[in-house]
Length: 97
Image (cartoon, rainbow, N blue to C red; front, side, top):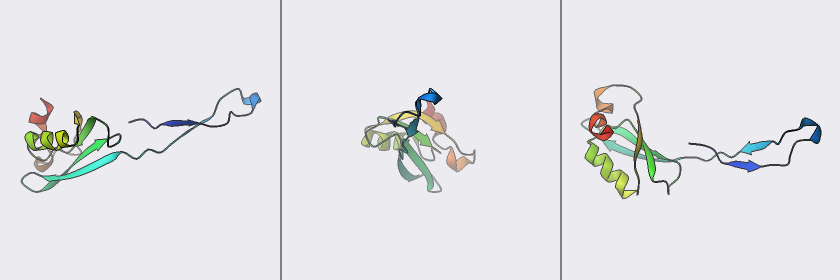
């Protein structure tokens, strides 16, 4: 994800550069409780209108996660696994296909 830039007044002419500020744009994060141990899985998008999502710790079945993504008008663009405990990777292989 990239931050949006907002132009600011140029730096003094002697510096020969333009200064820009980065605006903090919080991502849209949805938490799902899935899998055999009710593990948290997160869907992270740039904003609520984004159609691409990063799935963090796909702890449920891939079909459950895909249904949740579809209900939000999104699809899985990437998968992030924070660690390899079985309850955090239950849906990894199927979701990656």
